[in-house]
Length: 391
Ligand SMILES: Cc1cc2nc3c(=O)[nH]c(=O)nc-3n(C[C@H](O)[C@H](O)[C@H](O)COP(=O)(O)O)c2cc1C
Image (cartoon, rainbow, N blue to C red):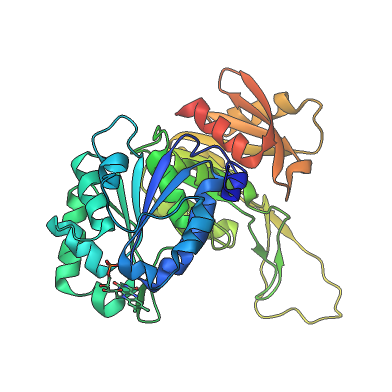
């Protein structure tokens, strides 16, 4: 009989379909997050095999892990030689050994090749049979800053083990966000066709200052930029963002407010392999007044045109992709192609105002030879298609 945990398999995506992930759980308080992490990995299609240290069982009950994964956790090694079964040199071996959370104790033992718990024995076996291993440390800041721990983390990195840096907060080296852990699993097990590519995604809306407190802005939600950055990250890219608010915790982001900020960023930046600009950038800016214009006064806004950002991006990007928003579908391809030529773009993605704020989009992806791909779907699907065109 199938465990109900299987009911959620693939509900979000099939990105981890057919992948077996062994999760090693150790005695950190962050073990309480494991239920959610396992469920999320299953929602992306993965099969999860849980392994727990004795100390992990004192923090979270094995029933909770069985509930989350649909499988009784491995708590000891038996005559079945579970470590070899899942992580040995076998055809059906797991695709990834994820240790989340990983204590200072387990991390150091792995670095020294010591195995005296089910989790450390799985690690030794996985490393020996070249299964990718991802370690997600969680501990007190004082433990994290112990020079031997620092050295051991370095050692693991040098041996090709993926370490997900903790967040230093409230005197603790807190485990990375659940979303970041799941995204990194997808990245490690993904197609990696954007590996070593420097990718910049520009998204969100500009706000142009009328006075010190008022702005003119637009309704862009920034969802397309998030979908593009996520997709590029999952496909192995070295992703950066310019965005109007906080973006993804695992993508380094420069925040902008106005068109002027973007002009400054262009001057500061190094070369990218790919730049995709789907930001809604103002074409005009008011002549800004100092302070706050008094309420109740009649006011005329004098708007001045500003230089377009897209043509400038060619200075810092090999492949530059712009977006063009239109009200009507009729004639959209021609108008978008004219813009592609004017802005010296490599591709342009035309779409209509219906996509503003929505999770869905109908897009016309047009290249320099005027080839057009029309695609309708979730913004993540559009993002995948755009990268398929250039990867
Ligand atoms: C409530 C509680 C929380 C703990 N949290 C952590 C932690 O976040 N990180 C850590 O390295 N150790 C933590 N420890 C200490 C470990 O459980 C201890 O070092 C243990 O030997 C780890 O064994 P294991 O790595 O085999 O699970 C915690 C202990 C307790 C009782």
